[in-house]
Length: 284
Image 1: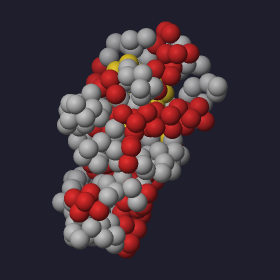
Image 2 (image 1 turned 120 degrees about the vertical axis):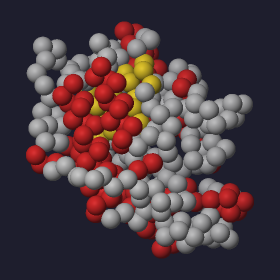
Image 3 (image 1 turned 90 degrees about the vertical axis):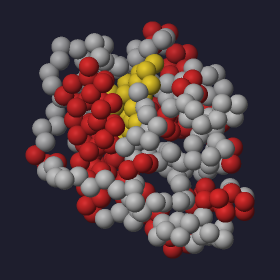
Image 4 (image 1 turned 180 degrees about the horizontal axis):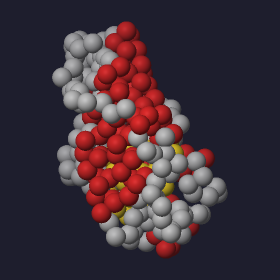
């Protein structure tokens, strides 16, 4: 969820066959209903544990607290995207759906999109937070192409089956470079490793070359998010808004890899500005 400093070289998904993306028919199916204008009447979030509220409550560690989700949560301390819309647009009340799953990759994202299109009433606004669990570092061109193929397949399901929904995709929150600066020495020892993308070694010392490699890898995956989204008229990317956040200790939960309540609040605020710039909510 956060820009992790310890990478496992074994986290790989190589698709047996990478689709030719240029051959996909990317336009949504015809519908008598048009996309919303102004504020959406309903919202859903798809993706991984960054959106589930996992580990966000110190009194209830290592479980999902959906109420704390930056996207669809109901905790006033977070002031989620949903609550910000509700304050301006009462019609959305109660229409906040969280389909995100802990540990989700683009495989699970595809299944989540199928759940969306099976709904009688499709959410007006769909937010996607994905990528973290798919990352292989260092990533080959094939790794990136495989990720993009799975991601685009999920977006196509939405374009075809939920053509009146607007899709908003966020980048990776923060960066390894800013995250390492807020960790204590004890915390650095806890995340140190010997892998090619472990920005901290087992002695808790920074390894600049590995850290730079991880940064480049994350940006490579984010480029796939941006490029895939551009293929669909109903999709908007945050243009790196999440990734430009400077990490703070207060944003991290006790496991140092998920949002605290303050982290969810920061994510909600950043997402709101990005949604405004994307024209998916009105300014002001």
